[in-house]
Image 1 (cartoon, rainbow, N blue to C red):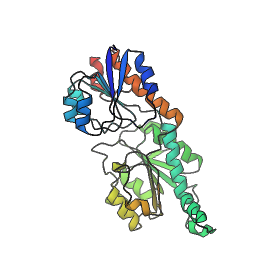
Image 2: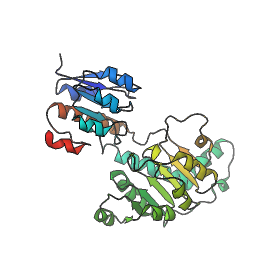
Image 3: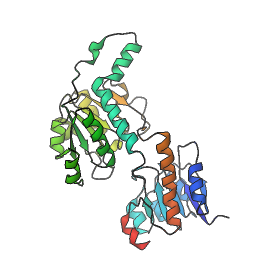
Image 4: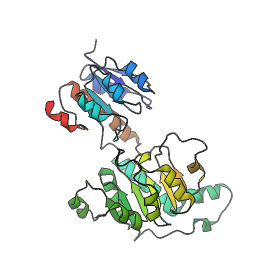
Length: 325
C-alpha cells in the first residue's frame, strides 16, 4: 500500500502517466477523478494527502472538508479555482506552475496580433468562399512604428515584447508591480492604464485573474481606445468585461479582437462573438505544445511530491506557509 494518496480532481489530458511517474518517487498513489461540483470534490477528497486540480472548484467549503490534505497543486499559472485564503488558514500549501508555457502563450498572442493586423482570417474565409479580392483587408496599416500596450509585465508579456520589437512595434506596459529597471532595460515604457488604452494600436492582456483585475477592461477603457485598436487576450476571460467588449465591437469603438479565453468556456453556439467578422477566436489553446504540456504535468506533480517529502515546492503561491515547512 502506498504511503500517500493524491487526488486529481479533474483533467482533460489523454494520460496521467507523467504525474504517476513523478509521484511514484515518493510512494504516492494517484487517484484520478472527473469532479465537476464542490460536492464531487468533497466526496472524492476526504482522505487524500494531496490534490492536483485543473478546473473543479476548490471553494471554502471544499477546503474546510479536507482532513489530511497538505498541498493543492494546480495545472497552470492561474489559481482562481482555489480559495487560497482558506487553504492558508488551514495550513494547506497552494502551488501552480508559472513558467511552463511562456514561449507558447507569447507566440500565440503575437500570432493573434498578426492575424488581426493583416486580417488573415477574413482573407482566408473570402478566398474559401470563391472570392479573390485583397480590398477586403482595407484599412490595414504598416506595423513598424505602431504601439503595443501590454497589460501586465511578467514572464509572458516580457517575452512578447521582444518579439513585437523585432517587428518594429513600440512597446509600453501597465503593471503596478513591475520593475521599472527591467522595463527600461528592455526598451519598454511603463505608463498608467488610461495612457496605454489611449495610445496603443494593439493591447495584449496578461494579468492573473483576481478581484482587482476582474473586469479591468470595461466601458471606460474601451471608450479611450483608438477606433483602429485591437484587443488580444490570452490571460483569463473575466479580466475583460465581455459585455463591454461586445458593445465596443458593435459600435466600432475598437477595430477588433483576438481572444483565446472567454468569461464562460466553452462558448455557447449563439454567443455574439462567434458571429463577428472582426473577432478571431481560439479555444483556450495558447498554452499548448507537446513540450509545454509534459512540462506542466511533471512540475504540477513535483510540487505535490516536494510537499509530501517535507520540502517547500518550487512554485508556492501562499508564501506565508514557507517558513513553517
